[in-house]
Image 1: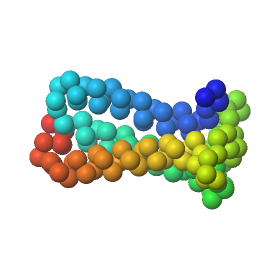
Image 2 (image 1 turned 135 degrees about the vertical axis):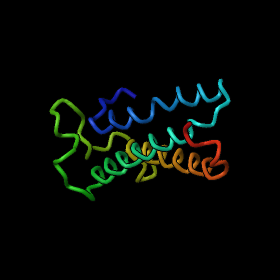
Image 3 (image 1 turned 45 degrees about the horizontal axis):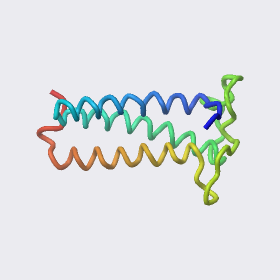
Length: 118
């Protein structure tokens, strides 16, 4: 979309993008053992996205890990995209990670003997 990503956006991408390759490998090899790996990546990404969204809406005021820590990144409190009054870019990431967590967890519960890593 042409926006400069903030530090927290980069951290979220670190946990989202590898899952594309995991799912591609799982499709080719027909192994369900990646479900646990995807769940772990999604949970960590969900926590980062939750923190990011809470920073953006002003529920948290933390300088420990915010977008302003590195001077050349975008500001988290700025709304680059706002739809329906509440959907922002961090909220979209939060929703994506939550969906992956729910899908992975439900699949893990459905076949626990095949889904845990070897």
